[in-house]
Image (cartoon, rainbow, N blue to C red; front, top):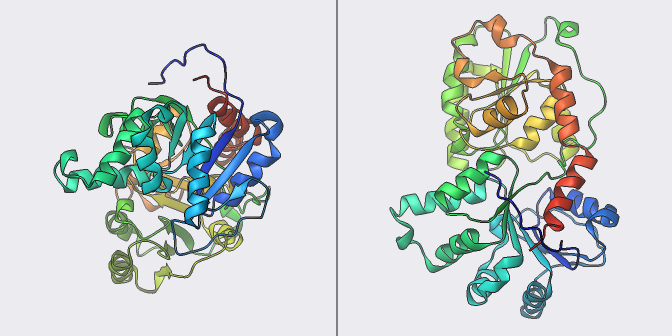
Amino acid sequence: MEQKIKNTQATRGRVIHIFPQEKFTEPFVDFVFRNREYLGQDQHFWIISIHDVVYPVTSRENVNYPNSAASWGRLLCDVIRADKVIFHDLFVLKRPLVALLCLMPWLLNKVVITIWGGDMYGLYETSVARKSWRRLKPFNLGLRWCVRHCYGIGTLIPSDYDFARQHLGAKGHYFEVIYVNPVDVAIPDHATARESRQGEPLNVVVGNSAWPTLNHMEILERLSTYSGENIRVWLPLSYGDKQYAQKVSDYAVSLFGDKARILTDYLSPKEYLEFLAMMDIGIYNPERQVALGNIWALIKLKKKVFLRSDGFLWAFHVTHLSMDMGDCLQIGKMSYESFAKEVDFDMNRDVINKYTSVENMRNSWMTLIMAPR
């Protein structure tokens, strides 16, 4: 899958990061500036708003916002002058940037696009809904063209690159990237053992948001096999599709009554970490890559995680990293005792701690930034 990079002079010059104003933004900007000794001193950020929710970013030199025609002009000039341009997420490729890259296609030779999951799947599903790529609007066609012809594609798990290559026609070099998880940066070095909490309900969290790709209804139906047990089912539905959230909430209450607990308020990373620490089991049922931050936080907290064995997340965690996970497709078929049974928490945590360590994260970005063109 990974393409061999030609043995030419490595890039270590002016690097432009174009990043969405997200909960991941401040931790990543801080990580880059703390590691300029390794990544190169000439790092510049342009932060683009893509949500109504504003996530604060510390004011720093070389961190800018394209909030006027003049600042957009400066951003476009930065892209032209840079040695490497990294678009973090497809959503930051706004119309002026797509137009620039289509009109000056040689610039794509220094562009790496990191794909987070939902951005790529959304572009693909738009084409499916329109029956053909040819029926897409010019902007989406231009966006797909940039994905096809850019120098490199970065993804969180290898299966996402395979998907980009198969369904979007990506041809660029593959880079595995790791981001700072804002949820788990303050995880303490302890976890609550199940044995010490006998008599308390088994707390199960299903998904992390109100998106249909998480297949809540299927899991809730499977879980209903255990509705007579001492169990609580928690559903974080604070962001996503509000109509879908209501359907999920109504269905959960119909199956579990007051054992279903619905979260509709936004929580800070610290509050959300405290919530995850209360859980015993996390269930994530998408076929594609979703909720990695939640999954890794639960693993570091020594909680049992279920993934579906025919999905991208299983391929990464179980097949690639050899971790001990539960299978969503067996929920309802297995006994309640097997469902609640512990996995190898220490091994899982050691694997993820090593994978998400500062050293490994730094190495992943050094590989991308210093890759020769």
